[in-house]
Picture 1 (cartoon, rainbow, N blue to C red):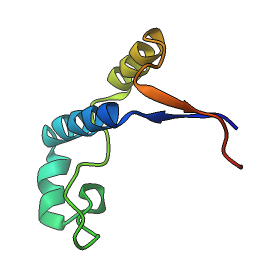
Picture 2 (cartoon, helix red, strand yellow; picture 1 turned 90 degrees about the horizontal axis):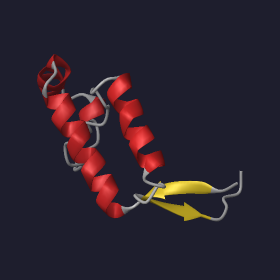
Picture 3 (spheres, rainbow, N blue to C red; picture 1 turned 180 degrees about the vertical axis):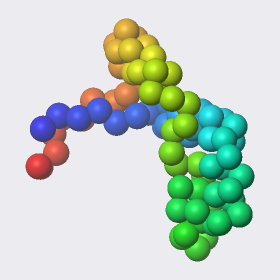
Length: 83
C-alpha cells in the first residue's frame, strides 16, 4: 500500500501552524492549566506541543488543496507498507 510522508520541513511548518491556531483558543490556555494530553503534558519529558488543529475544517481543506495543486512536493512518496 503506497503512502505519503511529510518532509521534515513541512512537518515543522505544520506543527508551527497547529501551535499558532491552537494558541488562539481557550482550549490552549485551559489545557495548560489541566496538563492536557493534547499538549503532550501527560507524558513526562515530552516537549509541550499543541497536537490538535484548531484552524477549522475549511482552512484545513485549503491546505490540502494547495498541497495537491503543488503536486504534493512537501511530501515524500514511499513505495509500500504492509497492511
